[in-house]
Every structure is written in C-alpha cells, then in structure tokens.
Amino acid sequence: MKFKLGCQLNYDVSSTSTFIFNICAVENEYQQILDSNLQIQPDCNKEEYIVPSTENSYLRLVAPDGKLKIAYQAIVGLKHNLDNPLEIEEIPPAEIPLDIIHYLYPSRYCQSDRLMKLAQDEFGDCQPGYARVQAICDWIYDKVTYISGSTDSHTSAYDTVTERAGVCRDFAHLGIAFCRALNIPARFISAYAWQLQPPDFHACFEAYLENKWYLFDATRLAPTNGLVRIGTGRDAADTAFATVFGNVQLNDMQVYIDRLDDKSVETKERAIATT
Image 1 (cartoon, rainbow, N blue to C red):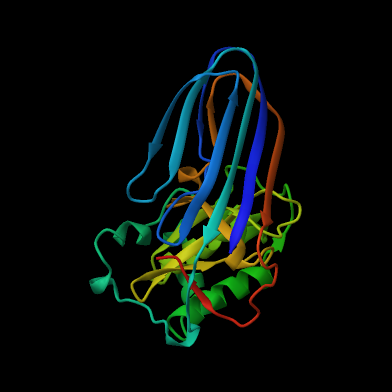
Image 2 (cartoon, one colour):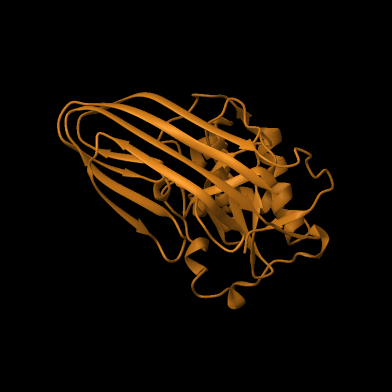
C-alpha cells in the first residue's frame, strides 16, 4: 500500500518562540519513506532528532516574531504482517521483554491502577489474547460516545470512562489503560489516517501479544491498514504534533492522506502486526 500524505501548519508568532514538532512519518521495517519534503518559512535555526527506541522524528526550531509556515509531505509505502487473530496469545509478565515492561505501568493519561476492578469485571472472563483486546475495543466503541471537541488536553482515561464521551486520543488512552490493568503492555500511536473524515491527526494504540505489537483502533473511524505512524509513546504526552514555548497562535492546520495504489480495503478480519 502506498500513500501520499502531509500537513500544513500556519502560526502567528508574537515574540521569538521555540517549537518542537512531531509530524513526520517514521521509517521502520514495515513503513518505508519513498519521498519526503519539509518546508519552513521563514528559514529558521532547526535541529532534527530521531529517537532510537521508537523512531519518532522530532524537529526543534526557533522562530522570530511574525508568520510561521510549516509544510510537510511524503510518499510512504506500508507492508504489514497479517496474522490470524485466533492464534495470538498473551504473554505472562515473567516472559515480557524487559525493554517492554514500562508499557505495563500507569502513565499520566492512562491510570490503569485506577481501572483494575472495572477491567477485571468487564474483561476478566474474556478469552486471553487478541480476542480480549478486541473485546476492550468493542466495549469502548459501544460505551463511549465519540464527540468532537468534548475533551481537552487534561482529559485522562479515568475521566473518559466516567464521562463516557471523548475523541480519538481518549479512546486510545482508555484502551491502553484497560490493557495495562490486565497485564497486557500497550502504547499510544499518533498517525495519518486514510479515509478519516474530516482529515486530521489520528490516535490509536498497540498491544503487545505473542512477542509482537498489534494495532487497534476503538473509534472505527478509519481502516487500520491505512494508518501511517507518526509517533509512539506511553500516552499522548509523548507524541504531541506540536509543543510550543512562547506566545503563539495557530491560525490554520491542514492534514491530508491519499492512497496512490489500489483503493480496495481488506474486509476479512486479520491482526496487523507492526513489528
């Protein structure tokens, strides 16, 4: 699968300010960057850094007062590993690789320690493995109403399960928190999402099963095989598309992703392994 994607961000900068962007698609064993271009107007001092453990690509720049325009575009090829969901099992904590263990712990937006009883009540009797994580996604889809603008940057998984409303980042945080409460490592994913309407940066999550990361999206707003990864982290705090230090106003944001090859979508349920 091949996609053309990108974004454009337009800011008013009132005084010299520092930005950290995380808008570039990552390159890894299943996601290949075939072409990319990043334009910054005006030209600014900038630094780029790729995190070895997650491949997250961070861009830091210092912009003077005035207008700032960031335009990123890329052509990305995806090659997923597709597995049979019925054959994917959970891993006991004693066998989880040590470099994965931190994805079991509660984090700022995913207070799994506060949701253990609810997770056991709702999912304790589910078949362990991929089926249990899918049951978590089904529960969130059925019990939480997707309402644009209903939450903010302070909303946590505990808030979402209490208020039963949220946006994609809230659905992802709740899925992660439930997984961790059941001793399943889980992590947050930010992405460009093919067929998402209206186009925007999207959030989903991965669960670690059978020594692989598997992709899940409880919103059902876009096909999982059309998600192009931008960032990976314990929760949204690690993957913000822009972090700003200064007096800045975002005037306009445009996000797009188009498929360049066959537009058909796989309808048979398969588990998408991203490692």
